Length: 84
Image (tube, rainbow, N blue to C red; front, side, top):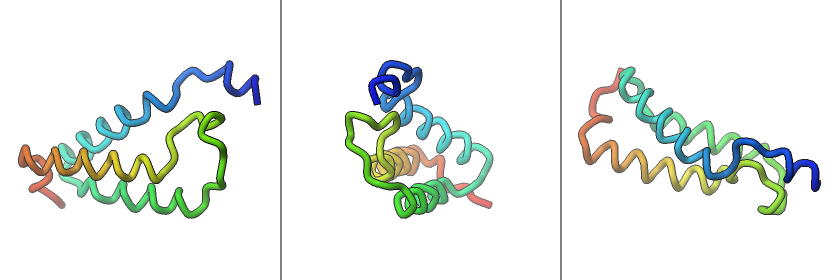
């Protein structure tokens, strides 16, 4: 467990930025960014419980909330109106 904590390169702080970038690129490619919510819900079902201090990534529940906020921001700027 200590080795896991020490050897982390990218971590919890990096995931929200990666998720926002993925949503933006998905939207720019005219795909529905809400599909990422379904992916996170699937991950939530299959992921086991792990103490927060050992997690290298935020849990799917946290990521779902962040993705929903990011989608609302994209909607506010009119970017998610174009879908395939």
